[in-house]
Image (cartoon, rainbow, N blue to C red; front, side, top):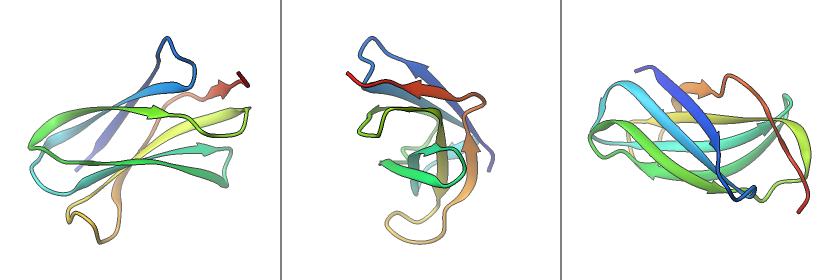
Length: 100
């Protein structure tokens, strides 16, 4: 399964929208959403259940340090609650988080 990730700003700068798509419907399992800053700082976002669709949308409330070079990262695992994450996708561009 291939994962595509789109990341879009919302009117609230502390909330971002992450849209995920796959090349096939995911009836079981979970999608994990993280934010990565640079190459080694990871921040957990949330886990979203697969619902039998090939497109999913979720919102993240950002609780991360202000800075640049953030990217959204999405992965899929076929068994909810356990197992390795696979089919990783990363947003094509980076974004900046500013203090509020």
